Every structure is written in C-alpha cells, then in structure tokens.
Image (tube, rainbow, N blue to C red; front, side, top):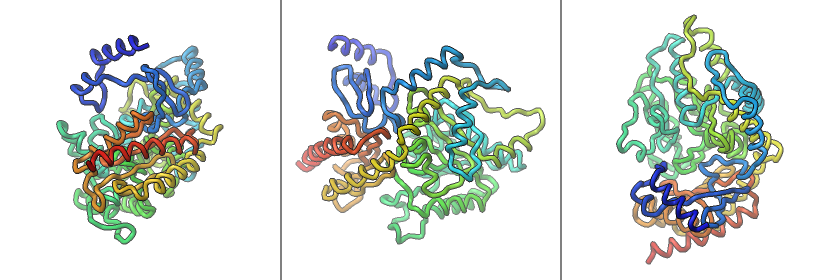
Length: 457
C-alpha cells in the first residue's frame, strides 16, 4: 500500500493542478489521497481514518458511501446517461426533480420553475442573466448592475467571481465593474463600528444608499447568501433580511438568494430563507442537492419573473442562455435519490437538533479560551472567530496563521476542520450524531491548546 500511495502521490504532483493550492508547496508536500468513505468518515491511501468535519466543501449532506445514490445513477445511465435539454428536448429525471423541488421549496413564494446547471457558479451566472433579461423585457435595459455583500462568495466564473467580494480572489483578476459591493451583516467586524443590537442596521441601510448612489434605474439585482459561508459562517441578525427585502421591493431590484451552501437542510430547515420568511425572486442552489455525488446546481425563478420573461420577450427570440449539461438526466437522478435519503432519515431535523448541540457545546467548551472571540453558527455549521484577547486583531499576530495552524493540527489528529480567514469552521454531514460532535470537539480542544501554547511561547 505504501508503494501504491507513493506512486499515486508522484503522479498527482506530476499531472494535477489543485484549486486554492500553492503549487510550489504542493509539489514539496504532496497530496492527501482519499480512497473511501462511510458516513462522516474518510479513508486515506496511507491507511488513516479521518472525520469529515466540513462535508467536503459544505456539500456532502447525507454523508459518504450512500450506495442508494450510486444505484440510482447506474440505473439511469443504463437507460439514458445524457442528452441535451436545448429546444424542447427533455428527460424524465429532470422533469421529476423540478416537480420534487417545487414541492419542497418554502410555500407562498411561487418558486416553481427551475433550470439545472452543473454547480453553484453557473447557477448564479444564470440568475444574473435572467435578472437582467427580466428588466430588459420590461423596458429597463439600463438595469445591468448586480449588488453583492462584502465577505461573500458566489463562485469563480466571470460574473459569479465578480460578485464574490473576498479580496484574495481578485489579486490578479479585477471584478467586472457591473458588480457593486455593499455592506455585510458581519457584526463582529462591523464596518460601521456599531454593536448589535444597539445599532441602526447600517449594513442593511447601506443597500439603499448604494442603490441611490448608483441610480435605481441601473441596478438589476442584489445577490445574497442567507448565511455568509466561505466568508466565515456568519448568520445575519433577525431584522436584517426583512429590511433588505423591503429596500429591494421599493427600488424594483430583484433579490437573488444564493442557497448553494445553505440549501437542503444545512441550517436546520430545507432552505435558510425560511428562518426569516424571505421572499426571493431567484434562488440558486447546488452542493447539497446531490450531496456531491454528481455535479449539479439549479436556479429557481418565481412565477412572476418567469411569466414576465415568457410573455414579454420578443416573439421568435428564445432564452439565449444554455450550457451543454443543463438538466443532465444522470445528475438529476442522483439528486432525486439524495432528496429521498434526506426525507426518509429526517436529516433536516437532525441538522437542527445536532447543530444546536454542536453550537452549545462549542460555546461552553471554548468560553474561557482567550483566542475564541466569538462562536456562531446555524444548523450544522459553525465557526470560532479567533482574535488576540480583548481585541479584534488576528490571533497569533498575523492574518490567518492561527486558524490554519489549528486546522492542520486537527488533521493530524483525524479531523478535517477548515480555516476561513480568522475562523476555525465546522460543517459536518447532516447525518452526524451528538456522539460524533463530542469526538469532533475533543479533537478541536487538543488542537487549539497545542496551537495556543505554540503562539504564546
């Protein structure tokens, strides 16, 4: 096995490029190669068992090794592995998945028309295109700008990457000027130096101020993650989304909710919009829709938007947006099997119950830790914001070094946690138990103590 691992490691370094990886460092250290998985645990090529404390990239909601999904995929591939859905071509799994999603989308929002994509980036690209088209067919062609919040992540393709505001993604690639940043509801690092709840929600009012500054007749939509994910797992105050929705409606700005991470049970509800009764015009989805078993994303459009585009588009002009793998039958079959598991095993409710336990356990365990400045979360994901004691300065004195060191120590002890800027973050599969959480936190305690001692030497 050791020879096999070494051979694979050498081949990886010779031929593969890895996302969000420093190539020169990777060539020296080599890859961590996974060969199997069951539930919340992964097996490595060098014989280790690792707890997947981050669900891959927030997406393996039902856990690893679910043969039901593999069997559904194999059965579909035997019948029809793929055919495009351009023009009036269609397939059974995509049709059934559209019906299924219409049934589980929160009631009263009219979100019943879907286009399936390959992931979150192109789901957001499609939503932006449709938002601009909606305004154009209504005679407002100048509405081209897309607003997004600071600390947000919406993908890495051109438009989705421009809506992503995390600075590291724009070091050598400036965002499209049609994408305009607004304030985020990041209370710990409030850019207005206010403290919740004794504030006036300047983060929400900044949306109105930017719309006014840019000109309401130039703004097509605001895209927002219900919970900022890659930016640090940041739930908003309860008052935030009702006010933002009010501002959007008053200015005829469409609201796109990016539920790529938060959808399919991650927050303890099927969709995070349910926590604040938000009524979006579009919803983008991916990740948990198949639990990562096959690539798939989706855009949901509410009935008003869909019917406006349908009825007001010039006759003879089709919707000029399409990707080769839209409405992919095999990926849609994987999604149907995945949703079956979520429903039958009560994983949305488990996400709430075990997620609450995880957050309470983190808060009680790390209440006296000098580096744990804030602990927050919702459902089955949570973050420990790290800072020097009594300040908001980076723990360890330099940006991102402390959380990265803790994540590394966690891995050495059998847990994948993730360093998100100044946060140590967890997002385990929705099938995680309270006993699993106890084991995860025990590992995290050891890792935090070792790294804290190291930085205090």
